[in-house]
Length: 406
Image (cartoon, rainbow, N blue to C red; front, side, top):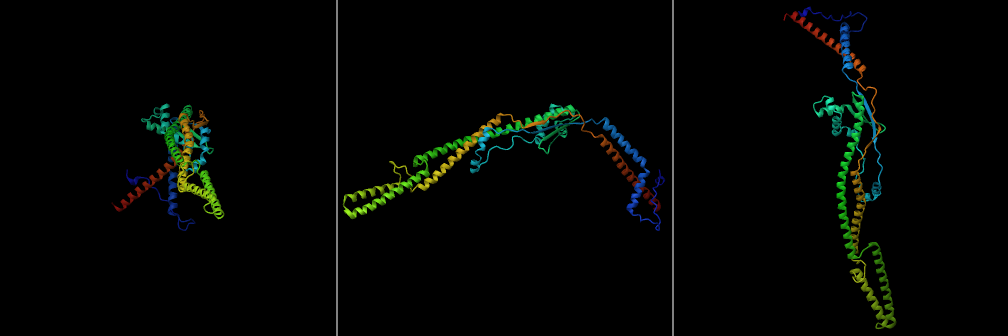
């Protein structure tokens, strides 16, 4: 067929320049031409759009099954604090003074939104309900991927967790949703038990180390007490200073009486000899207290080593108190870790169990038909305009070749 025999698209007539109209711009000209083309092929466009809508309607009503969504609502379980928690919480201020924080702590459960996406949970559900065969998947990975597309979870504004599952069977949708809730608790319990086993290993090792350190501190403090006879340094030092002051006062009084006796009775009198003996004995006692320990009876710390003894005493006392407070904290924590290891932690409670849904959740066939109709109209219109433009270009190209004699 000769290209010249094809129908020619007449260009839009341009009104005379003296007509009372606005100038026809290229944009207006293209708009008028496109609308003219659409009106010329309106029956074709409508026919194609209706055909697409009919095919879509046939497929949606005969080939697409109904989907039902089951819904369950859960919330974190409340766990009452035990007696061991009360004991450990009472040591909080003391541990802060030591620069330590409480072991453990935090929430007793994990977020169900993260547990929902665990491979362990989804694989168990796929195997339990035989979804690999139902979805006609060749591998477990594909079945888990298809299962995850139908499983969803969200956190509501009230703080509850909403778990939903879509399936072609309303009963199976409810069964799977309730099974997922149960498995969320099972996975949460397993993770909590694994964490408790890890914690008890660490706490037990730390507790045994604390017993060793406390025993070392006790023996060091006992050896210090035996060496210096110190049981309460503050009280003993105060008593020692009082005794030294009393002896110094007695010595000064004896020296005054010695001077008076020498004036009254002479240097060789018996009274003078008594006062001299008293002064010598007081000086000897004072020298012993200031220079060395009187091993026969004195329990005073020599004043020349008192600062060093005080520093050592404070160091040993601090170490003993630290280890004692650590033991008071670690022992309840150790017992609590053993309890956590043995108990089955129920992380979530079901507020609303999933029931068999009555109304379908999809597909929205009316929306599909509307989308098919609009899409068919738009797509067919675009194809007609593009095809007419190509046809017009081919005609002009052939006409130009004929004029040029090429």
